[in-house]
Length: 123
Image (cartoon, rainbow, N blue to C red; front, top):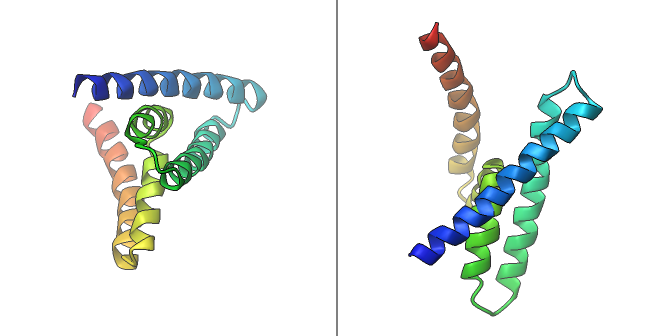
């Protein structure tokens, strides 16, 4: 259990630092469009989690260590949107179309609503 937590922490820390550096770099290129940094990181994270999961599913070795370090840790620290993309992919693969649609729509609507509520409560 401790080994798993350390793997996730190591990957998550690295992912968070790379996200930060990516946002700084993107901000220098497009200073007035800070949302592009988040968009780019999220898309890269989705691509990475797809590559990693595809590789781990293809190999016959126990990929739990790599999954914890890179998927849960790195991609989780880099962006949680990648996990969101993977979860929806899994729902669609198992033909849970309604659940996937509800998850997508509610995540966006409720997420934005809670940002608004949080800001409102601090005023």
